[in-house]
Length: 89
View 1 (cartoon, helix red, strand yellow):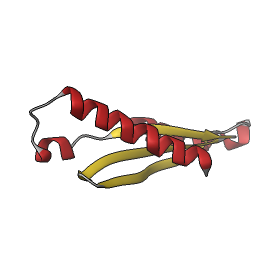
View 2 (cartoon, one colour):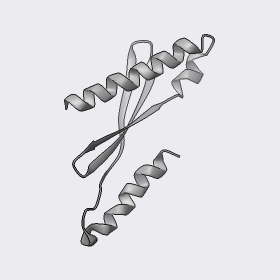
View 3 (cartoon, one colour):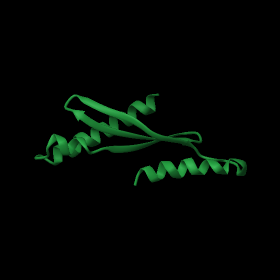
View 4 (tube, one colour):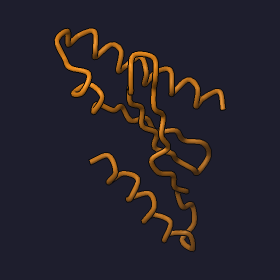
């Protein structure tokens, strides 16, 4: 839980830094920007997305999660891992 909060704070800061570097951007354009973060615990990975909805409102969405297979019998779980990676495209 603490790691997730740290990721949320870091992605929020990334978006704020980007906004400060681009001075003349419209809210409509800036609202379409998102920052992705990958959270890994054990054999589970989660893709998180952060967007700024308004000056004081943020959106944190869990896009996908997958278990990384460790055995040959679990090899079909790689499809979920590849789906997660292709979401970044």
